[in-house]
Every structure is written in C-alpha cells, then in structure tokens.
Length: 311
Image (cartoon, rainbow, N blue to C red; front, side, top):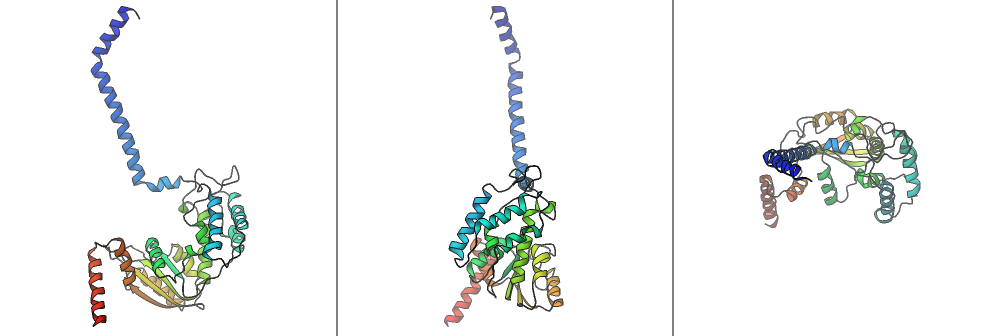
C-alpha cells in the first residue's frame, strides 16, 4: 500500500471514527431489540409455535414401546399384538391428508385392541386435567381414559400424514381446531366414545368451577362422552365441581352451565348427585399451594374434626 493511500485511509478512519462506532452500536442495538421481540412473541404466542410442530419424533418406538409396557406391567392379562396395532394405526393415518382422517379410519385399530373395564370406577373430566390425575392417583379405584390401553399409548403425542409423500409429516401438523377430521382429534373422539359406552355403575365427572362454561357442550365430554353414556348401565352420575384455591368462584352445582348438565341428565333419566369443592380435591390443591388462605381454613377444619373424634 503506498503512503498516500495509507494516509488517506487513516484520515478517513479518523474523520469517520465516531460514525463507525455509532453505526456498530446501532447494529448491535437493532439485533438485541429484534431477538428480544422474537423471544417475547414466542412467550405470548405459544399456540403459533405448537401449530408448527409436526409428528412426534420416534412415534413408532414410543407407541409400540408403551403398548408392550402396558401389556407387560400395567395389565399382564391382556394378550395383544402391539406390532399389529401399530400397523392398523399407521394404515389409518399415513395414507390420508392431515385433515382427512375420520373416526371410521381407526375402526380396525380399535378392533385389534378390545378392552373392558370394571364398573364404579369411571372418571370423566373437563378442564381439570392436572387435578384429575392427582385425584385418580390418590383415590386409586378411579379409571380414566388415559388408563386405558389406547389412552396410555397415545397420550400427549402429535401425528399427521401428508399428501405428497405418503407417510408421517414430521415438519408441521395443523391444530385440532383447524379441521373436524384431524387425525389426533378423530382418534380421541373414538376412544372417548368407547370409554363412555363401557361406563357402568357409579361414575364421576370432575368440572372446573373457576371458568365460564364448566360444562361445555363443545368439549370432548360434552359433545362425545355425555351422549355415549347409557342410562341402563350407569346408576349415578356424580358431578364434582371444584374451583381454584384463589378463585374465581364462577360456577357451582347451583349456578352456571352445571345446571345445563343436570338438566340433560334428568331429561335422559340419569340419577345424579352434585358436590361443590369436595374436601379431598381441596386438600390435593393445598398440597401444591399450601400458602393459600383457604388451605389454612381447610387445615383448621381437619384439626377440629380430629379433636372431636379423639374426644
């Protein structure tokens, strides 16, 4: 480099040093702002991120593995061909587009895995999933859809097929709400229907009293399971309405959509009971959040009962 050019560059750099520094800072600030904005959008819009999730990776190994786990450890009395169940499942899904899998497409799979359940143990729920699992774990005789073989195998998984290249789409699957014949929705609809059709004796329904429409006609319970219950097989429908510890206290056995559920049960000649905030359900919530004021009230009530019993 000749002296004149070197001198010119040094002069130019000195003259524009501040501008270069300012430009660099501006670029860094721009990048930080954009990354922060992107991160906030992910936090605020998780639904859009979930909508892009495709079929669960390694889904065959998960489903078949869960099947063997179930028939080996959960209910060894069952004699099912797990590989055949997978083949029927795959046949129903991979040859269809992601919004064209009907309930009927799963009939052969369900035919390959018939299952019966004992009476007086059926637990249904709506918008109370976490509490339902805790309740079923403590009150051991309850039997939920997730405890059946099909529920055990497919719980929390995502799947869909594709038109262009027959097989599972691992890049993107639509949300349930995108289409009625969604492959995941159709399977759970069929599973829910069969679970409700088998219900017998005294059954329990767990509803969330801290939301509007604790009983929702568009939910899986309201649109499928309720209509599939047989009053000739079910002795009592025991409704349990539970609110969050901190509220809000919106619906109960005497107000809101729960009254609509009771009216439907009466019109179909079901016997029913309804309980608000059963103590066992409150205690289970208090275990998770013991500092809530209502938990102290519950604890005092238990201590009072204990003192009366000991006296």
